[in-house]
Each structure stands twice: as structure tokens, then as C-alpha cells.
Amino acid sequence: NAGVTQTPKFQVLKTGQSMTLQCAQDMNHNSMYWYRQDPGMGLRLIYYSASEGTTDKGEVPNGYNVSRLNKREFSLRLESAAPSQTSVYFCASSAGTGVTDTQYFGPGTRLTVL
Amino acid sequence: QKEVEQNSGPLSVPEGAIASLNCTYSDRVSQSFFWYRQYSGKSPELIMSIYSNGDKEDGRFTAQLNKASQYVSLLIRDSQPSDSATYLCAVTHMDSNYQLIWGAGTKLIIKP
Image (cartoon, rainbow over all chains, first blue to last red; front, side, top):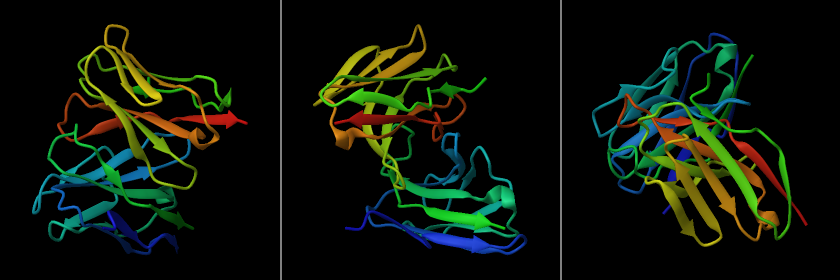
């Protein structure tokens, strides 16, 4: 039981390049989330998916797209990376569809955009 | 004004003492409150959740909620060096059933 896994762990991009961050969970959870964490700031929600086939914007969705490929997988795509997207990205999942459910986080992806 | 505020620290506490971490929030209708712990370079993990005014205890951890004053605190008794981490406060957002609003965290250092 691996929990929530993310790939890659580290990535360096040049401005304008694109990439997809992958996330998978093996806990049969319904909800999945993508956050970014910047120094001195709290976690900010980028997108979430309350169930397979649905996605919704969070607090900071601009510059990102997501795909809930199936119940296990939720990917985050940067179409044209910008230095402002340099951050640590966390994927999380929770069993139910409500905010009171415990969120389980992946190990994170540290992204640098030059 | 930030919606969830925490003192960034670092808060330095001697081993064996009580560590007290505080969090204030601006949304009066928030109903659910969470404390997550994050070790350096790692991901957050849930320690406590609290939904009603008063105290909730779990082992060495006690969460305290005062909705009238809009603050939530976390007490750690008998602090251990392994408690050294950043503690994140998260609060439900009034406009969303899915979104938490997070504080920036308080860095706690337990000195042996």
C-alpha cells in the first residue's frame, strides 16, 4: 500500500516549456487535490476532483490544467511554464467528497522554472 | 488581511515542556479546523481535527477551539525533539465544501 505517489520528485524547466505532473493513489479514495506550497504562504488549492470524471477550479487555477484519468490518477499539466510557477506541488486524496475528510498527501514535486 | 494567520516562528521550546501553537481565522462561519504537521522537506500529515468549541485531546496533543474569538490552538505536552516540525492550521472555506484555507505554518523547534 503506497498511499499517494507523485512523479517526478524534482524537475527543472525553462520558461515556455510544458510538463505533466503525475499523481496516483491506491486507497480507493474519491477525492483528489492539487496544491502548491510557496515559502511564507499556506498551501493553495489549484484544482480538485470530487469524483472520477469531475474537476473544479480551486484558488489559483490560472496556468494549469488537470485530468482525472480514472479513480486512481489525477494529473496536473503546465502548458507554458513561467518562473512564477516555481513551487513545491503536492497531490492529496481523501476518502469522501467533503472537506472534513482527512487529506493524505503525496511526497511532492519540487519544480523550478528558469 | 490573511484569512488564516499563524506566527511563523521559529518557536523554541525545551524538551519536556508544553508547546503552544496558535491560529486565528477571519471567516466567522468556518466550522471545521485542522492541524497538520510537516517535517522539513516532507508532506503534511493530519494530527488533529476539531469541530466544536472546547478542548479535544489525543495523546500528548490537545486542540482548543474558541469560535467566538476565532482562534484555534494546539498544545503539545512533554515535547520531544521529534516534534520539531512546521505546524499548519487549516480551516474550512465558507464558499466551498471542498476547499480548506491554510495558514503559512509555525516552525517549532524542541531543544534537548
